[in-house]
Image (tube, rainbow, N blue to C red; front, side, top):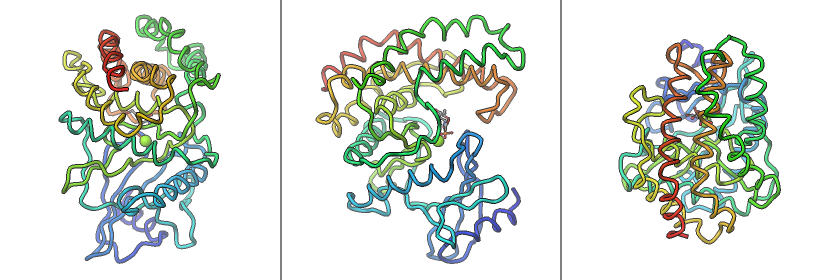
Length: 358
Ligand code: GN1
Ligand code: MG
């Protein structure tokens, strides 16, 4: 996108003040994100082109985000900093459609920080508090939410997609991947066991964020304390185990999500303890026994799901995730599998920590 094209898009939104610049921001795999800087004291904004192949219902997504953020705003001390604020278009709509593309704007929250990895147990603790708060603020949210991505953390649906992708083998990669495909198939029953509990209602369905990696948490620059969860694109109804598990996948990894050096990738149990402590400090009295029982396993569940999703996208010819080089999705698959194995080795310790905290 040229600067002029971006300016043209930005002018459809009800921005305060005058635009000084628009620059690319962040490293999301799905959307394109920009920061709109304003002249003088007017607020800055985040402009996003939502990936409508992945999010076929952007209007439904924005309705979810609006409903959830308004609910949070009614309950927090500082509503402009403790959740996102959508900036509507000049016509009052939550998105602007230009050709095939959907664009959205929200306020940039100043004096904040994000991290791409948990640099300390204190940060992991704060991240846990952040998602714990997000869940507890939304515990009394009863309005139905749109399912903006079908079966997002639903393992039964993931295996249906998986089986179809393996059968189709659209770019002929299946033959080279016997070992990796085995990693998925040998854990099928174990993973479906958790999802069966959600299907039967033994594990409750609540409002969940569904993308709780550390870079989706905003920290206050002055205090270092957590401010709020951002990137609300995938807010839907599911089990909060998704959110705990996805955070564990992100915070405890001593390497990168796509590390080529597998020696660097392990699960750090101190980070696990710190995140769990932070999360449970907010949620201890809300969780059901079934949720407590499956909390440690949720880390394995979501890490497994990520192995499956990266490998499935590689088999599918790299159509979902943005890639930086040819076998990027395969590198991601191996790095996440190494993390999964590390979690499996430490699973008993994870369970003991949860038992001591609940
Ligand atoms: C994607 O939105 P982003 O790029 O932070 C993905 C998550 C994955 C993550 C892996 C809508 O997140 O589910 O866990 O990449 N989001 C979607 O880093 O698929
Ligand atoms: Mg996201």
